[in-house]
Image 1 (spheres, helix red, strand yellow):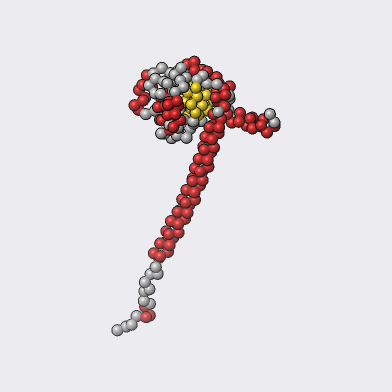
Image 2: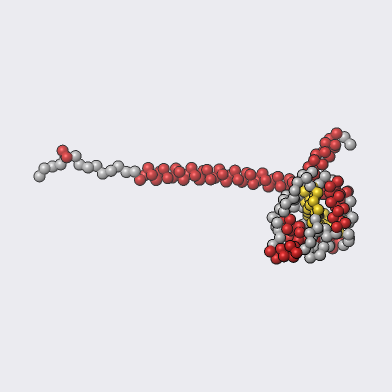
Length: 220
């Protein structure tokens, strides 16, 4: 490996330390395996055991889902240097396809129909069913991985994460530009209003009617 390749690899690894993956799987063994692989790859990881827990973490859980989630037992794992809180920044979702109550495909559709629509979603399954794979990819999934997931599979995700980060950065730049334009428009509008008020004030000031001088009065 030449020097440029080493620098590029180090840059990617440094970026991966800031990537946060939400892993969703009802199998404790599969969750632990996925967490270990992601941690080895320098990702921050949060694990949940159901699609509804994932929606809750993303802040997408509606009232109809709240009761069943509140009553269900929690089984999650977190591998991160920071304390995780619901709604925190997530850069990638990896979810099992076959789960009770809410399948990975249902979770995919909920995410893609929300404010998280740009986030990459990867489906996983131990069953190689072409129709299922095609359905998920057409529904917006970035990848469909067959279990057991390997380190080589995670390397495929780098391009999706980098593309997502580019989209996020472009959106931030666009928002900043729009905010600056809005501020400029507000300033111009305020200046225009001040000028109009000054003109109206100037137009309302008329010379008072001149009273006749006593000397000019004609005595009849």
